[in-house]
Length: 113
Ligand code: SF4
Image (tube, rainbow, N blue to C red; front, side, top):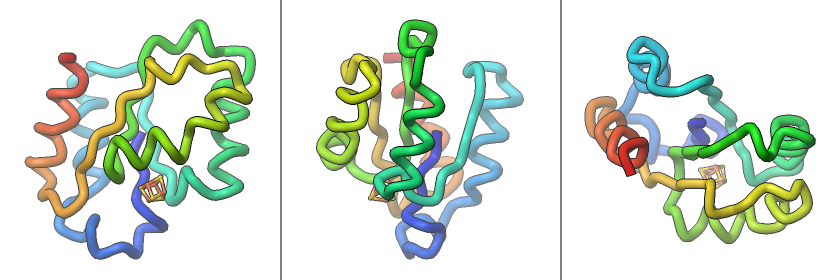
């Protein structure tokens, strides 16, 4: 999952986010991809509720590529608790200020963890 601070933040301008997610779709390393403009906003909470509601055991790992992992942990703690999603299955990857290739590499490393 890519989260890109509304798509207007300079931190995400060096990469092509569609190339990033298409790389993983082509390589079939993941079940699905999504881009959300702001997962930490109210509609982001709604997205999490719909995605995770009732499915928390089917999702083994969610990688969110966006801001710093520590920040993601803080921002998503409440919604993961509310939906019953085990937060240890969330892996945050900081891709800010990276190029397309650098972002792919960082996400790839998280996938192999
Ligand atoms: S979760 Fe992080 S990357 Fe996503 S909008 Fe919020 S601050 Fe930006």
